[in-house]
Amino acid sequence: MRVTALILTSGSKDRIPYIEVLIKSIAKQTVKPHEVVVATETSGNLINDLLRKYVPDIEHKVIETGYWNKCLTANKAILRSSGDVVFLLEDDLYLTPNFIEEVLKTFREYPSTACVYTNCIWVFPEGAGTRGNGIVSDLARVLRKLTIHNSALPRFVRKISDHLIEVPVFTMSVACKKEVLLRVGLYDMNVNEPILGEDYDLALRIVKAGYKIIQNTKAVSYHFTKQVSKGVRRYGEKPRALMGTYASEVYFMTKNRDLLGTGNVIMHMVYRIIESVAWGIRARNPLLLIYGPAGSLMGFIKGIAYKYKN
Image 1 (tube, rainbow, N blue to C red):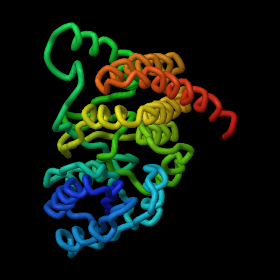
Image 2: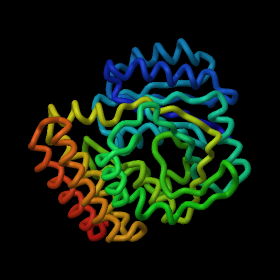
Image 3: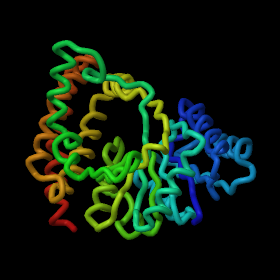
Image 4: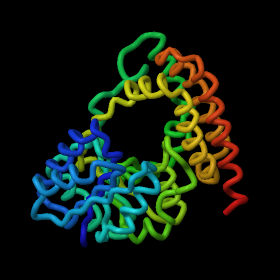
């Protein structure tokens, strides 16, 4: 079984230290990949230097696109990868040394499995409700019950053993068989940046095609994104970005409403609209109270229309 580790990044200067940490963690794997591919918008030469420095004995290449679109970039890299199994990795992960080894064990134990999701631990949990007590935290936890993650997805979860769980979705700390990715059509390219939820959409289409996704909690990665802090900066400076983010995510949820349930999708959309208020307060930008609901509505309409266009 040939293995490709695929890293997806914008390649901006602030991402380079994270990419270096990830490549170093790949170099220290107990079972190494046959190939490392980095798909990036920019900084190709610098990233190539990091690959030569840390994984000189592993086949590697950089695909520099000159544009940033997660779905388009990922698809181009998957098509150019040589692995039977492709690890789809965020650029700000650290992989524990037995990460690849544990994932491949799962594929061997359950050969019909399409994807193996891992135990991706957020190093910097942020946002109301992530910790502590109080009215704000309690309200946040109640509101999160409206999300797809809490309303629709739990009924698809099935425990297999003490560390293996059948799940319906994944994020980009996952390994998938390339043939399955190709059969379901790779990432949906009918979206523009900013993009959110593309990995959930891919996973849900894999499930609808009759394949299984198994999570191995012994395969641990650490995710270094500060999601809320990054969002406050981004949406404060560019409030229209929230409209694009919500539009893409709600679109992905709505097009999969046959699996998730239309009612659950609407509840998730309501949650995002309420969340827009929180973003507006955090970023001190009242325009977010307009762009958030607008994006959610746009995504819902686009998701409904998807059925009639395909």
